Image (cartoon, rainbow, N blue to C red; front, side, top):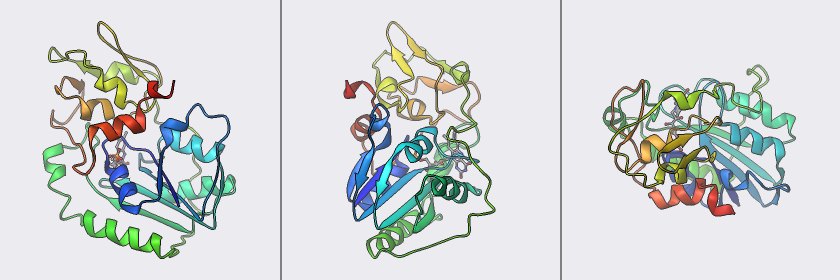
Length: 250
Ligand SMILES: Cc1cc2nc3c(=O)[nH]c(=O)nc-3n(C[C@H](O)[C@H](O)[C@H](O)COP(=O)(O)O)c2cc1C
């Protein structure tokens, strides 16, 4: 089994680790010309960014040649998953992939403009994230099916329409920044460069990894609910760097 994943704050990686199989971080495949994989089961775990999914996830589904007897897709989300998983399923069908098991896992919402992270962290228990994670793992290991009718879902493009080339302008770096470079290493898009200061490029995917993992809490959005941050407790910083850092591929 292969479990592909995309993660910023670790929620999707925590689920992917629980499901198991060979774990492959999608950002590490960005420069590969050939993406051909064959396994008994192939799945994909990623955060929901309504009305879409992260651009790299959609591009992966567009480019990869996947061969398996059983396909699964799980979106992690915080408060409202909308129709995203149906739209992703519809998108995948156009690429010849039919998900046998399609679901979503409610967990902490890491979206800083709207949510306060200390309050969100306290929602893990009431959202029953642990129990649902176990159930999802059991379902996949038993190769259970959960089909939905996605025909009426909205079409999505291969690039998340929410991606804004001017996103860099929404960041603030305060005096606590010591140029440690963690923000560059956790960015799945290779969009952050640290030299004599922190530079943000034009292809930010809005995943917020740089904001949540800054060890000095020196990175902020001009419009954020509070300065509290979220890192999934089952995931270590070094796992996020291994998953996302673009320079380690060179
Ligand atoms: C740009 C952005 C958009 C998001 N949109 C939604 C959304 O529409 N609905 C929702 O429930 N959660 C939304 N979230 C929250 C994430 O989907 C959720 O916290 C997810 O588990 C994060 O996964 P990760 O820790 O693997 O990055 C959004 C987060 C970000 C950063």
